[in-house]
Image (cartoon, rainbow over all chains, first blue to last red; front, side):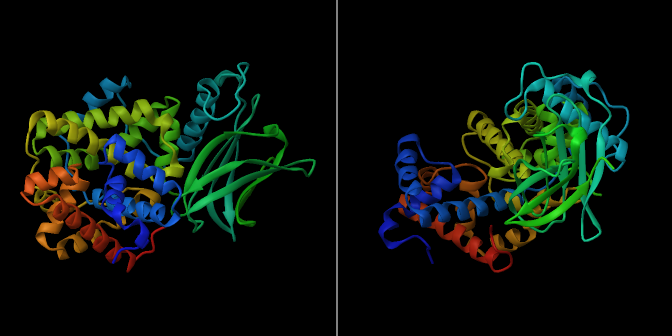
Length: 220
Length: 186
């Protein structure tokens, strides 16, 4: 049974093709114009897209041919890794977090970076803390000093899908918003510039609908 | 603590972090290669597609927007599109869509939670696909996996255009209902 309003019935087939990405340019523009003004058709397209994504996810796995990895890494311009990455080691995560933050400073990831932003050499040792909720660890927070400073947050197991707000409180008691970020299946991670100096951040947390999902104490 | 999410690795890749790229490739290469192989049907071509897909992810990681969907969906869509381009050049008629379901099954071993959420639906989707009438299942697979338009499906299956549209639409709607019976879509 269709969930498309009866008045939109003539577009039913086109909604399917819009969701699958197989509409031609002219048709696509026409259907998009309708969908933008019709909440129910928009929802129908989103649902059909979710089904198509799920069908694609049933793709069988297969072992690539020998040498696949090395050939790919050469094409990517990567140095040949001698060891498998050990993601569960905190040190490795700190390195990656620093890499994200330092690289972001260099590459301009995020909004409003100044040309005077420092490179990796300008970064002090990171400030790290576990993100917790009800005495359980829900992720990690790293702060990197700099101008601006950076926050890297990784979270999982908070049980929501949707936008969450990441905030920090500084030592003077003021609260500032870092940004709004998407969490899928209770998990997400992001790196973003801090609205206050890293050394002044006393706590950081994420909230959804005014409810704090997880928080971390920083700087002692 | 579990390992870093796909999104964290993509954030690292976006700014050139090699460690993140290596971890991401090792996490996804079997799925990307498996999807490519199931579409192009030939190992050498599948390797080319899989390499191109992962290379594209590496080069364009900065445009990935997690608000628009999971990383797994983005990566598999890139792979599918490249595979479709490849078979348009190499093979006038797509591989039999039944091969997609018969090669094996996706695994969520070693995959972080948010990617696993997409993969977790795989058994239900496979089960639901198996309950569709064969002609609907073929139409859905040709449209979703092989990227055929309704007109393409009509021509390939030698059926009227309206019938092709109906098969695709009805098949997807049945799949959706089957999934919604288990998990509410966001």
